[in-house]
Image 1 (tube, rainbow, N blue to C red):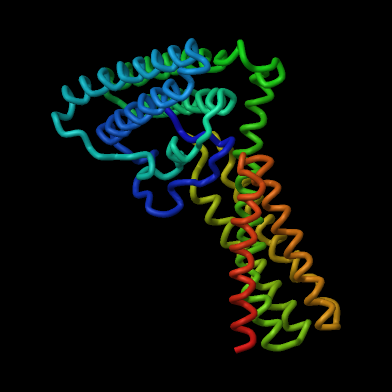
Image 2 (cartoon, rainbow, N blue to C red; image 1 turned 90 degrees about the horizontal axis):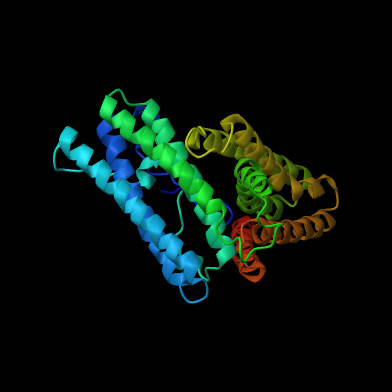
Amino acid sequence: MALDSLLSFPVLAGRHGATLNFTRMNEQQIMSLAIALEEDDARIYNTYADALAADYPDTAQLFRAMAAEEDGHRHRLIELYRERFGERILLIRREDVRGFVARKPVWLAQPLDLDKIRAQAEIMEADSRRFYAQAARRTSDAAIRQLLGDLAAEESRHESKAETLGDKFLTPETMHTERETQRRLFLLQFIQPGLAGLMDGSVSTLAPLFAAAFATHSTWSTFLVGLAAAIGAGISMAFAEALSDDGALTGRGSPVIRGTVTGVMTALGGLGHTLPYLIPQFHLATMLAVAVVAVELVAIAWVRQRYMDTPFGLAVLQVIVGGLLVFAAGVLIGQA
């Protein structure tokens, strides 16, 4: 069972389009979701086994065994579902439930190496255990509660097994579970929301700022527009992040903390290239603002490469192309 590998996949489901709140789901919906998640995870483990079979046959065999166990979980869930709710299983996917982390398709995560796969497996099993534990607390049917509780205990054993993957191949430093856990929590609670805020603040405020600059040639007016855009974007992103996930299932921590981090970084991203317009000389202020934008975009690309496993060249291309398009839109609108 799994939620996303946060070491490399920052995109979140539930911000747009999710229709179900986990805390309000009934037992039939919870069971349907559990069945779908077990199907997904068995398929992922088999994919990992295929990728590792040539170089690490023992580890590949272990992943196939874990996939078989997930299939066993699915069969037990379906048997009990059939007894309680009949033959028709509700079509509920992880992206339909608010707060679940969206996982990038396995084929987009190529190349798959043992280090990344091990980290993914640890997170998958930890999230599965958390899901079943939370789901068991929400059920009143004794048989369903017992099954979900049993599955939580089994996923806990899987988590311990996943933590030992690659013992023969990884250095002691990378095998240190506590440090890896701390790093994941840091990514979940600070890096991801902070990066989302910085990207939004640095890019989305470019158009209104430079549109105002080239339309008015007034540094003070431009500063006020940039200040309003940065603060407005910060408030909007703070509420969007805080309301997107309560952290109960994903372990992403307090929504207040995440929302604050996102809002502050969004505002800072917009203020960085706004502050130069406190300089009265328009051309000097504009050149300095453009320089600040360049630094911001490179910094964002570096953070994505450092913490999200995005190749630096690709990160630079994605961020700079997007930033240049927004910048050009602002300049063209301002000169119109």
